[in-house]
Length: 153
Image (spheres, rainbow, N blue to C red):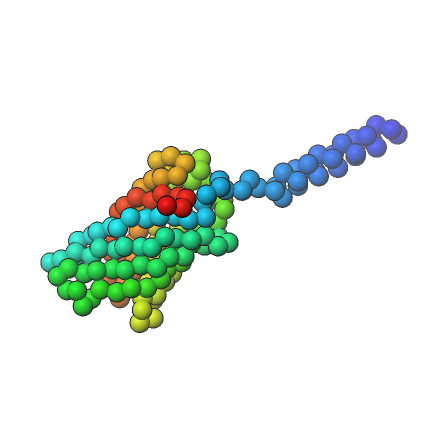
């Protein structure tokens, strides 16, 4: 009679331990509240586009930034706007382990035209890595390659 009670107690404690380990996932490394991306350039038909994002600031599961896109030689096609990308904490933990992380987001230019963003971050170490961004603008997909750095300044 005592053995079934001990077995039931052991199983209950094991189940509670498994739930506790799932309930408190490890937080992303400190300093990941800001993401810096340098200017990136891509070619278009008879010209180029330079994308200069501001610092991405993390709030919840999102990073938000402003951007400026300049088009050469057609300067009047340039624009400014803002973009928000979704990167859950699980993605940050994968990046901290050196794994590639894919993300998506949306934005809008100064006229309110939507901009859809997808991308991939390939960490080189705990705070830097390569970045590939795909931005859909007015039915055209622009592909930018660059680098990122986590942390402020």
